[in-house]
Every structure is written in C-alpha cells, then in structure tokens.
Amino acid sequence: MTDKKEPLKVVFEPGCFDQFDGTQEELDDFVKEITSMFESKTADEIKALSTPLNIDDLPAEVLAQLAEHLFEEDELKDLEKMGMPRKRNLQ
Image (cartoon, rainbow, N blue to C red; front, side, top):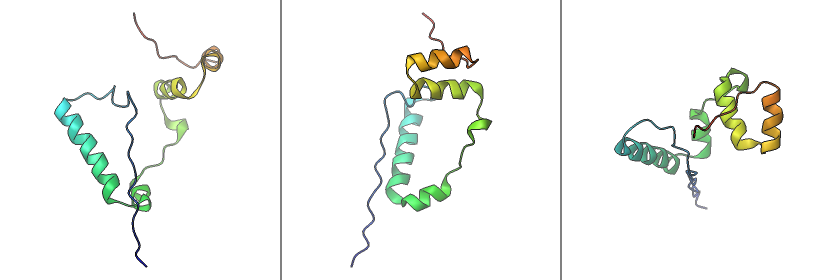
C-alpha cells in the first residue's frame, strides 16, 4: 500500500493582499513561498508551524475588519451601537 500525500490547495481570495505594502515582485515571491509551503508539507506539519490567535488580544481595528467580512449590514449596525469601530470608506 502506498501512502500518497494529498496536496493542500491554497486559494487566495480577491482582496486578500489589499493591505500588502510592498512591490509586485515581493508579493509574487510571497505568494510563491506560501504556495510552495502548502505543496511540500502535510496538514499536521503546517498546523505545527502555526500560531493560534486569541481574539481577545486583537486590536479593535482588526476586529472591525473581521466583522466586516463575517456579519450582515444590520448586524454591523448593532455592533456599532455597542461601540465597535467601523471601517470607513472615504469618498
């Protein structure tokens, strides 16, 4: 019996690098490095390399960005009433 490792698939969602502050070449290298890591390691190896996040330790701005992706507009308005900062788009 052959133990065949199934490669993990990396998907970069649109906008995932919008906050990247570097050159296109640096971004290309970063994407290549991430993709290569997932192609060459097992899920257990990647998990061992990861660092768990405690949501209570995240800055309010980061929590607001997460909320923008996780909640519907009416839920965001409720959270804003409770004091959560909102990401603002200047026009």
